[in-house]
Image: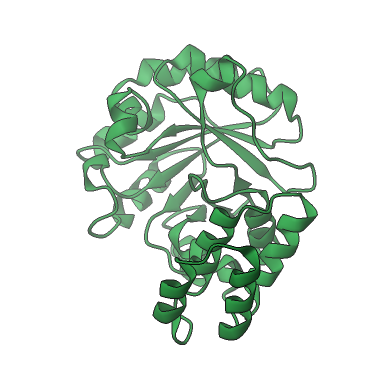
Length: 283
């Protein structure tokens, strides 16, 4: 697995993941699930066996609970190929609850989760952000029993501002025995492959660039992407106007008159109106 679609909260649903895979994503991941909700039986995921190299990401503050949640969902969906602990989410709400990037400072909790996740017949991983310096980041990574590590090249407090630090990602790749998947600011699969060839990482993960163009993994941008997405939603009974408007607005970015399209799409109240608008603008 070299090219990964990131788990995007409230966005990377089953139809979107399948679309990304059609255009070259070698691995995908469901949006992160909350460990407490899974343990209480209140969390489901939209996953299908036909997805290639499907991953599951769990967020939570308590290592044992995170591990149990991952294992519970793996047993329910045994076609999942890799499990992941979210140690990178920078949102204040997630960190204040003790999850996401707050776990970077609680390695013992991460290790508790990993020990439980090892009972699954799947690859085990973590997604992290970088710490105050590269040496501390490396020291943390070396403490974790994982099959690969996904690294977003920003510190938690940077959120998505500035530029991702790919030199730190390269430093980790050169000093760890497990594969390092690089993440941050990649605008195309071509950029990702260039990073791999230059020795910065063993694979790459794309998030925001895929939101507006699922074909980013094939370095192309075919017209009619929304129609393809719509057909997949119809196939799986996942027609939701709010989601369809969000996808249409995202897919229109960079196209002619996209600002005008987004303005009109935001005020629509029916699927028929949205389809007519997409036809007009060839989204």
